[in-house]
Length: 401
Image (cartoon, rainbow, N blue to C red; front, side, top):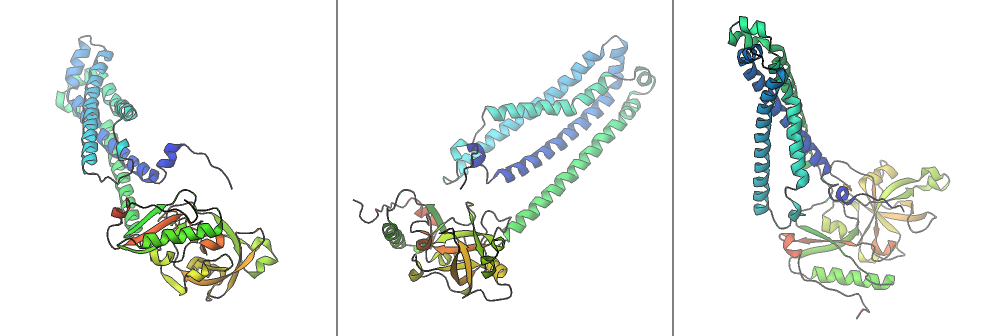
């Protein structure tokens, strides 16, 4: 066992951090494209005003005065853009809070805080520094003699051609990057929609049971059966089971397994993710059974050394063979390996995310590992499972007053 310490804010957003960072990257590219547009427009505008600026320089105007004027215009544009962005953000959050369902997690924490305001102001200042200074410097240092000798429009448009071309090239490059990134994100999203997680999440409600359920294996086993019977008696509940952990929730810990050759060579033991389940788990999650059978009530005892494995482990342990009826060595209850018999092979379930297949899996009954080990419950309902989330429910384990 080990203990990992992490900041609470990183823990809370760990599941959505990749999506948030990808969205932030797309917004940064959009900001850069918009700034390129504004910078190009400012360059064109300053080019058309070069004769005016050249006359002011010839009359004694300093480059600092011209720089201040053009920077002030850039600050005005950036300020209006920042204020408009904050207004749209406030309106969007307000509308989100109006239409968002009550089950949306941490809904009350959504809002514009001081950090968001500081970040927005910093982005506005950064935009000025990146795309406002160049046009300002260009306008504050006109070629007085060239501009005054030529026509205002021709000299103005020809003076900053190289700089404007560079801005346009950068803008087109950013657009290509954004389009490629958007295409990859859309392709990944479509691919994720077609990935089979190994179970059916529709009409499935899961919850975790906290608190003690008994001091002895017999008490814990009796309490688990009582909870299952009470849940199954609720109208609209089709099936009930429990497991630790549930797929796509993380928290999987590997154990060691091996075939007969591992008895002579410890290096032949390999890692596999274990999962403790109650009978009916695969039926409740609708995980396809590929060979053999799943657990029954008679298997849910400490002295029944039977397991169910997924197709990935079955192929790895017994390639091109039927794994049902064969035995493997596992290390979970004792330091020494013990033999268990494979009674069934099921489809592979995704452990942590849809993007990664994860490690092979092996399933034990709750009583084999220790009654009460399966602490996350799942119920499959005939209708919307959300309406069962606040169902009044109370149970005491046998012998408790």
